[in-house]
Length: 270
Image: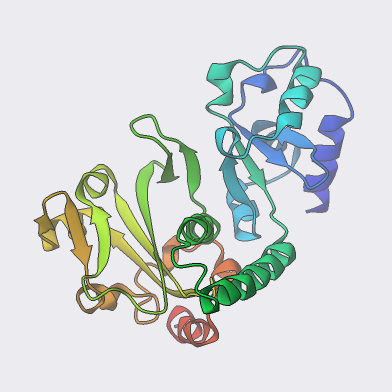
């Protein structure tokens, strides 16, 4: 990591208007809001691989998703050219989130939610859990999240495969099962379900091939329901079949309920 940090510092020490690094789609972002093109690091750091950063906790975020106003200023200063809208749509950041701050925030939010639920003030707070569950999926599987070209919102990809991420919030799944839009399943290669407890920790994970879902489960109109009893053989607490898809096991363990984390240890260390 020392060579990596030094390379990022070196890139920021001078401008690069005469290079073609401005064409890069992936930029490393450090906490100090310094950036460097991925292609530059691959040239300057021996045996450098983006996968190594993901394994150590880095995640992908799109410029369209997170903004980063200072990046545009940095880009124009570094490359002596305007950041075109067409280029901005393609740009991804690889950055390291502050996991301690995030974990502390989750604990605080959970306490606030409990108070509001106890006082009969809050009855439906799914928006935050859904976004947090999607973030978990990005961390654990190294997903890229880009603005969708076919629908409102964002698409998730794993390499060249499209992924449908579904977040189920609550201490138990509805008897009807997890509800999926058939059209999104048909458009994807994988379906990842993050089961999140009410305290915002992961209670289960399920990784499925979309072709299996389409073939095995009948749809009701535009909807597919996946009952726990029908897919539990693919739960991470029971199967290590898709352990190879996990690129950041530390994140998986860190944000899981204690009982689930113990089962993960049993199944994923075999």
